[in-house]
Length: 563
Ligand code: GLC
Image (spheres, rainbow, N blue to C red):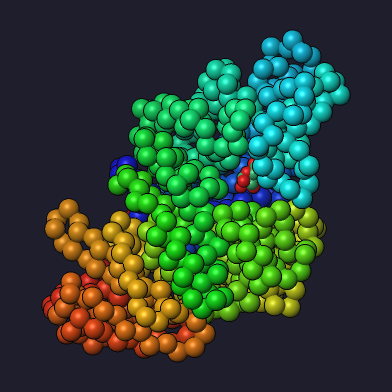
């Protein structure tokens, strides 16, 4: 793998659940052997880095986000050797690996908690947050609203309450305890020694608690993250830290400044992309991007459409939340906590044009995109499964039994088998052989995206045409050799043909727009006013060429091969 500490800025990420991806030993659960067998698929897809959801030993109350041993692999998913083999196989093919690091809490079955709750004077007592009253930290919101009525749970053994931000089976660790701080740094070292490339750090804002605050984003939390970064970067400079902090941009920014994270998910942007395409109006997207301050050069946003959780509506107004629920989750069963537990394709009514449009916008915006496994083939969901399991069903590889995911008699959750999204219709094999399939279109987008440093690294400027159904922006990049690239992203959010008049094109005079996605060449820009006709849901990535450049750029495909 080439050395490049800023590799994540140009990378396409792929989030996958080992349990859901491929079952290598025929027990009905995906595992590391299965993942190793499917590396080719990831290479063909063109992703640069996979993010593995938690695979640690766990009672699976929260699908692995309830860890009972930080230094091992859940037997269902394999052994540490299987893990190493998978990481090596991915590395050999140029794909990096980041793993989920769940440090805010453990499982109640972690030996530390078993000890901690065993007596008031147990040496591990102080590893968790205990109190003789459940009245502390009253200003703290409850996250798992549908199941938990309080962040405190009474423990009958020692007759005190313990603190938990998520399920009661996930007691929060006490970060005020230096032993806890030290231990978790050591857990990170353990995985880094096994060769991983970074961590997606779970539930970042909640590490510390202080009376009189909402117990989120406290200065103590920032301080610990700085220490975490300093410790691991000293030993592993290319290792990255990605923050899961579901917060407004102004709360998120400090995590990227001051030597903390390399990347952070842009949570508030995501629901607004869905608003934009449903309302056929760019206003909400523009509004949140205007509220997003610039971030340091060495950092990057992570942009996404869906992930393994509910489509969170925490970072929207109450009015927007009601609107999103009404439009995207008409049945109560589709809702969970403050969100929507559905996959991308069903959310977008299985409309290929809309699915491609949102990807084209996401790939064009500042930030590195993350795809959620299965969305690249338009997998459906199963709202009859509990919690978020309905969006975590087995990957659909082909039309054989259990979608080619497993040879077992039954799988950890049933494969999607409905008439629209079922594996007979929706699977990798069928789509791989169809040049116009969603999978092949997205492979193409990924390929083009990876060759465009302007999209990974360029500056960002929104354009405000009169037509509100069109969302447009410019990315501009000058590489170290002085070569300049300008890409105009112009997206029609509506289901009807739109004409857009772009103005203020002084910088673009004399150039010829060339759509990187379709290879279409447009009329040269000769005045500062330029009119484009856009088909329904069409998104153009217009690279602006000065004369003579066109041929040279059109063969840039070669870059892709030199990963
Ligand atoms: C994060 C994870 C979610 C999990 C929670 C508690 O939000 O994405 O799946 O339930 O943390 O660990």
